[in-house]
Image 1 (cartoon, rainbow, N blue to C red):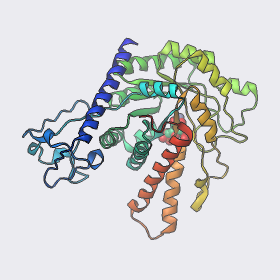
Image 2 (spheres, rainbow, N blue to C red):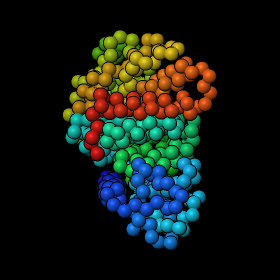
Image 3 (cartoon, helix red, strand yellow):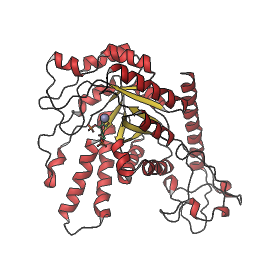
Image 4 (cartoon, rainbow, N blue to C red):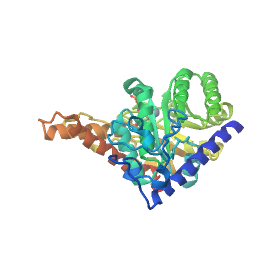
Length: 400
Ligand code: G3H
Ligand code: 13P
Ligand code: ZN
């Protein structure tokens, strides 16, 4: 616990001091543009000239992802390292990824939640970060095992690293979503993630406790936070009977015992949400009573809600076939965010937004075969969806 606090404290201090340096660089009246090179980072603002005097260009690489540096680029495909670095000095304002401890503390007190959005490629990451910037909201970028298999862990880490450079003002966490084993969690911790989830919810309680605890020990030693899960996210069944709810939803007493025994930093619980686009056959339902009990037994402790997409209308336009899809109404999620829920996971709504935009672009211009022509509106649709979630569901706008 002590070690964890130490790491978390350091993390936040580091972020704050770097953010202050960034704000100072922004205010500086003198700007220097190295000849022929346009400064693209920091929202197109150049660095103050006094920071660029030395003939040396010290490269200070601390870890592949925890830190990054301001870059000048003359071509978006070429980084600082490929241009003449000895012509000017960089002003190093490195922005680390952050853990979720501080984010959740503020969210709990402020009765809002942080959005955790699943990322699989560049366009999704860019759309989310742009939305976070416009809304002035912290954000959690999360990659599932499927995302790691699709894009490759290092591509995801690399893309997020660049996002940190472009959005230094946004507190950003990189989180493993639904890690299924100690080994995968370890690989992400070692690879630079600032947060991991171990999902042992399908295992017996004792086994879930045992593996979660092992991961917590490894993660905390490296300053990384751990989310765990207890209870099963129900399928599309209508959760009406008390017995059915008790069998599937998280038991509040067990949740308190689980947190105590594992030391996990946040806990995903089952109270009626489920993954994907087909969540309810009948009326949407969230067990607020259960959530309240968990909140009472674990005061101040951050609870996570998975399966929190709403499945907005647009999915069936332009040839989409999402008939019968139904999600969690946004006002229900908003209410949960005012309670103990500090992290809300959204993937399906981003998929729907992106795919709808691509369908629309291809439908409206069947002669279009340039991926940029449909990925650009798709990226914009991700941005608009995330902005909407921040405003209508999370309540995390203007909190940084
Ligand atoms: O909860 C799961 C997320 O929606 C990630 O889905 O495993 O298909 O990447 P995925
Ligand atoms: P949705 O499928 O409802 O978007 O849930 C995503 C999720 O829980 C990711 O872990
Ligand atoms: Zn999930």
